[in-house]
Amino acid sequence: MTNLYTLTILIATIFMISCNDSDDFELKKSTDILDGWEISKITYDNPLIFADMFFVNSEVGFVVGNNEKANNIEALFYKTIDSGKSWKKQALMGPTTFADSVHVLGSVYFHNEQIGFIGGRKRRGGGLLLKTHDGGDTWNEIFFREDWVIKPLYFWDEFRGLAWIGVPKTLVPFGNVFAKTSDGGYTWEFLDLAIRERGRNFYSIADDVVFVVGENQKILKVTDFGNSWETITTPILEGIVGNIHFTNEKTGFIEGYTSMYKTIDGGLNWQTIDFPASISPYFGLFHCYDETEGFFIENIFHQDGSDMPLVVGNIGYQTKDGWETWSESEKVKPLGILITQFPNRELGYGYNPNSREFYTIKKK
Image 1 (cartoon, rainbow, N blue to C red):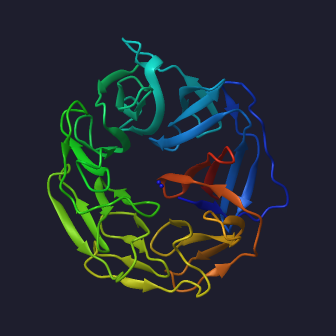
Image 2 (image 1 turned 60 degrees about the horizontal axis):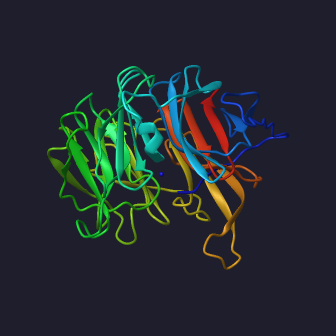
Image 3 (image 1 turned 180 degrees about the horizontal axis):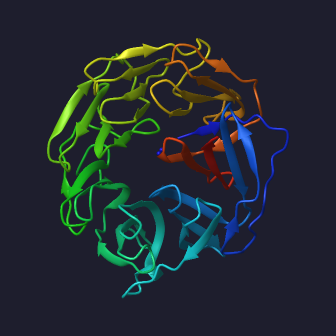
């Protein structure tokens, strides 16, 4: 899930492989990260840029991206069936020639191994939604609006789902709105919610419950296919909720700029998590393994006066006693992950399109 993530890695050697112009790539070497976790890494030098990733389970996953060749942009779709050890380029085939007009693919979501959706933008502008019933072998273009852009997607089943949609600012103040569908994406209804995309992970899904960061340090929660939304008050008094992570409907974590909070009753009550005083939990990668164990990777920045300070290293923090105490790693060279997804609590995947690296994060 959305956005600078950087993993701390304690290693003696980093192994990298190159994909060149091949349509397939393989995972070659693994490396230890943190205590009790292992990371595997791919580095490739072809022009493929991952835009989004989704794993249905620990074995089957999908990525969408775009390949820049000779000033043309080719929309690409890859699939793995072996936990990311190898990836196969899939053709975006369908009953029409829609693939020829695709400009950028930006989001992917699969309800199961067969039924999935891809959001993007047409070459000449406008939103695009593709749907498959056969695991990505063939696709149908089921929705298109000239002035919309389909962003992150979530579906409870084949028909009922949510999408974060970019629309003209003449329609909504910030140009982004949540919408719901009940017919598999053919039609969409805008939701009048006090939300705005901010922070890294501005929504979290657990046990088919969707939590969304709202305005004024609030969280919105929905359990009935997007129909009725509950407002949850957080202890953050200023700034924004920078990150949100729920492991189930009751247990969740939120980040402010300098604090982290935990709830075990669905947000009715919150307790402060004592992070090391020197770090800001907003700038890093956080993963909760269970109610007692988790880790946080802090980005170390070099402030040179530019708008985008350079990440020059990382420090890893881990807790194994219910978030009471934290162990700290040495400062190490940066290993960047822009987006991560954990199909289960013991296994995660990530990528960094800037350095063109793909990662597997696995508990030993």
